[in-house]
Image 1 (cartoon, chains in turn orange, blue):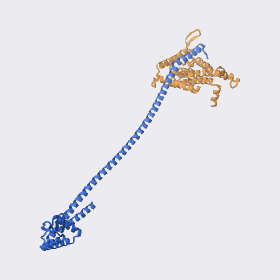
Image 2 (cartoon, chains in turn brown, cyan; image 1 turned 30 degrees about the vertical axis):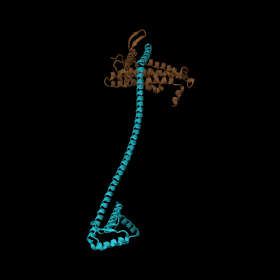
Image 3 (tube, one colour; image 1 turned 90 degrees about the vertical axis):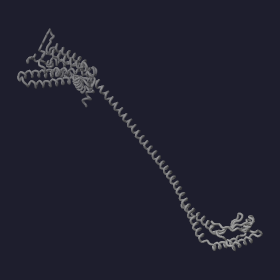
Image 4 (tube, chains in turn blue, red; image 1 turned 180 degrees about the horizontal axis):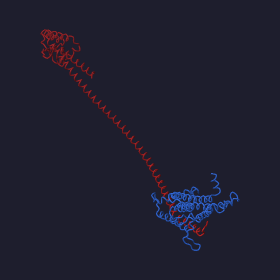
Length: 236
Length: 258
């Protein structure tokens, strides 16, 4: 029950409904599915949380996930996980769930759409200066673009743009290509081998989610740390 | 590559909505729950630490109390031992004193018994000796002996001192010349006459009335009696003297031995 043909690169091309410029394609539908899954599970589990040592397995699982994410963010941000957890954590959870659901037949990861990855990369692109300015102030943040000298400004700007592009394309390319590889493999060797590739796909999906969110965190951290802090850090 | 800008903006909105919802339903709650649990565990640990310290303090307190109790116990035991020693000493002293008293009493009794026995013995011996002597003399005594004894008596009379003579004269005067001469055997006539003559010489002016009596219990010897005056010569006297001396000597010896 594949809804995409091999020739279709992106789930954006699978359009369910359209009215003028408003399109309801597979990307949006599966995004909503992932969102729904995340929100429903969160709501169900956190409905009656337990403070005591005994808690449900689901709560335990979510606590493990959240505390792992917090730990990672803490390592990069020097102990300010509280500010960045919603943004970075959501990036990770959304991308991870979107990728992991790829084992479900008929599902197409929304991350295999360039539109989605670009939207996420733009979110990071916008979030970085927001966090940076919130932490250091506008002046200090702008100053960072002119260090060590003003000549570096264009390079900084190019860096910002290119890393956004890199985020977009890395995630899209990995997931999309994997989808295509599996689709092709299924038509070539329908037995066993695609299973291995699916398993590999799960790993790749998780790694990509990790890479995307960690990079976002690194960008945020580099924008929020002052020049002196950054200098100290490199000296260390 | 085609980017659908509607989908792009929709995805951004979707993402922001997801961020908001997850923040509301997931991170906030989970983090709060974890913090609360962490706080609870910390407080439990603190409570446990507090209780542990309390227990340690209590343990130290009880250890101290135990130590004090042990010390007190030892002290009490020492006191008791000392008291028991003192009591033992006291009882021993008392027992010794009692024993001494009993011993001295016993020794006293023994001494008295010994004394009385020795006294008794000495008396018996004396009496026996005296009796033997008396018996021997009685057996030996005859008229010849008597006569010689009378002669000795007459000589004694003759040899009396002037003072003695005065006392005798006085006594004879008082009695009106009555003089009794006692002896174990009858004195022969010539000797009787000689005695009368002696008295006639001795007391001039008074005619003495001499009466000669036989005295059975006298062993041997002669006795002269007049008003409150007595002149005697007899073996009985010697024997009495001997008995007295002997008894005294025995009693003295018994005293020394006791």
